[in-house]
Image (tube, rainbow, N blue to C red; front, side):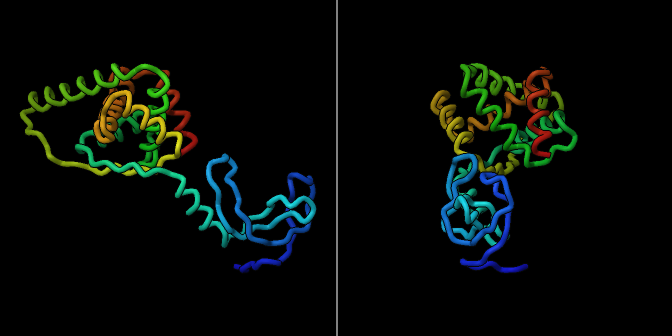
Length: 210
């Protein structure tokens, strides 16, 4: 791979000029296209006519990725294993190609929906129903409670983090309890009620991620 330096030149398509233009490589702070965050002091190719960034050399990609990751919020929780199992089962019910990457997508969808409407009472009721159903199933099968836990780790964008914080404030739940309650509601919608509207919305999201 050719390593580029400041002052190197080349050619690239400039959308602003609508033409293939000469470029020169220089270091700049480049804002992300979605307006959230900036990759600072990276080597880029700029159009010599309009000064717009038109090329990103491979050597700049790791710095851009790191800058993007810094804009994300980490959500870490250790949940009873059955909650993560149920979340994964709901994902599989929506799409047979579901992978662990969809956990964040499903939860983000619910955070957004719940933050926009007054469903906090429904959220708490779903969680209570979920706990009772688990106890009844264990009793029927003669099974003891399990102490197994699984770690749920996600990087979410500022919008999802804001939705989650709003829900925590509305429900007065901590992060772990909120995640458990949301997973219980996903189970109620997807696995129990088979809500067609919710499932269709999740399928559309899954197609973009799988």
